[in-house]
Image 1 (tube, one colour):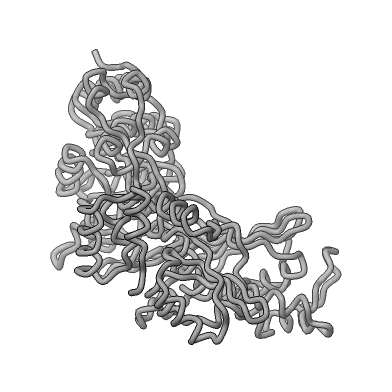
Image 2: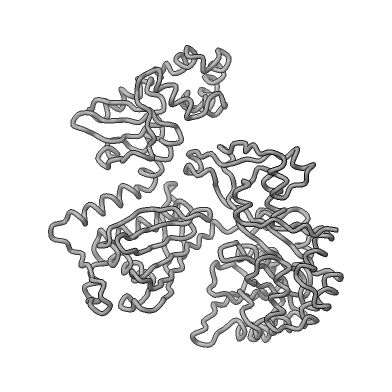
Length: 579
């Protein structure tokens, strides 16, 4: 390539002769631009490189997140060329195309784009991660630009085919509402929203009507991000379209409803992915809020070694799940990964010799070889009735989605005491308080101590992006304050998020579990029988070496897996209970 980037950086003393030589060799061996090579080798970061070029060449440096990219400019350059050259077309004015580049000294690229577009090129400088993220955003699934085109198409139409229904409770025509959802722009808009969320790996999509805007967000790695903010005229057609897809009653707007959607998505690789989606609608003061839960089988990890258990905790879990009988409880708030942990456990036990049955509300993922039952309370199929029926089906292992009431707990205990292994969930803050929760449900302590084998409390925290994480310099005292021992605080090296193209500039990619595993050992059983408090039980467990949620987070922080901020967000500091 006809690029003098290296000479510029060498002249301005940003690189040495040896570094430039190494960067060129790295570029040749990996077939990447010189700027990417310099960044990959750690000689300069993206910001330093971009600003250095801007100062030397006089081209403006821009943050692509702050610029509007126009569809007519995007259509001028194929995605393959944009990725190959690390460029991003911004906008076209008459015969001039503004082009964001990592290396505007590369005259071969500028000449190629000029030839392809028949336009004069006006380069501006942007960071590599900014351009990569923009390519993913605007080219990856064509989501943002396609949505913008659809919104413009509907908004600009002089004779709109979409009928907007007024907010009065009874003043709408169902036939007109159905018709509005069958218009091509609305269908494309809703499909694009779902496809974008699936391709990005989002777990949920939120359709939220407010007084003057209609907001759509998706949850990625546990955090909500805004996808788009639409005018209120889009609210009824979009929400009705989602309700039709999920087989809900679009005429019923006063009561909550539940539904399901099954969708097949074609990925950039050409592969097709099938996902199930759980849909929930809830009436709010400004209209129905709909949340779509995306159940992607590829996101389900069934190997317990990859969930985030510390070695000591994993050994306790493995020891408990091979028991012939007993109750194993997983506790934590909604969205903390309890289902994944339970599926991992029963998948480990899944074999030809075992009869495994589950009662779930609803079944989230189908696991071959396991008999799964959907709870339907409206017809009387509750957890309790399902569990009682299981006992007549010659089971070895049973999974009950949740212990909600005394009857379900009582049936689960009887099953455990008659030679069955039972898995279930409870909503509590930590492992020790789970026992008190069962006591509060009027279960006798002797039944708890005899049947309960293990309690796993868990939370999910975001993983740091391993490509861009940077050191988080904290004083030893600050580390002690969050839970490290003084001798540990002198050696711990913590990291924090930075942001790059790999992690969509968030600094995080994926999630990992924090786990607190309480084995119901003979001393713990004695405390339960004596009706001791959860504090006493936790104190004894700590003395016996239990790793708490906070400690699990601190271990992962020291390993560079997550950040201090994530651990502080999901856990509280352990009381000084050890003797």
